[in-house]
Length: 170
Image 1 (cartoon, rainbow, N blue to C red):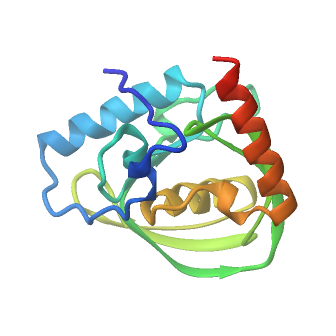
Image 2 (cartoon, helix red, strand yellow):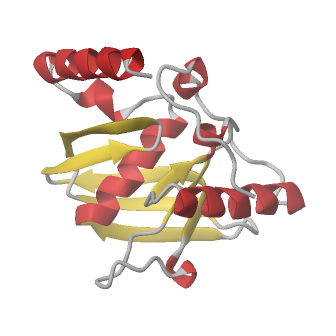
């Protein structure tokens, strides 16, 4: 089922998510709904808080070279923690919760993440480049942060101006 994606300035997006303790059908339904929602919105990642569920759950699905998001490449991460990060890269990011706005953000180039899968099994992933950006972006959501908070003061002002203008035209 496709769920509604909450958008800035919804206060829920500022909430810190809680760890998952029960790996049950309710969690599996949430993960399946998040996948359908992300695909319907043409996203590459989604945190549970973006569908108004404050749990440490995220999904990532980077399109392949043919721009196809094959479900067997889907990353489902429960209670993720970054255990290592190094390097710096700048990537133009957007967010389903901040529609219509993209901006360059500085993040770690290379990360190691430990997390659990939908059944509670421990997993570890080492990654870099765009996938590392996606991980860091989605994990920020779990802490109650949006990518626009990483912008310089001038870029932040530009965002606020564009946001206000987009609200007036609705």
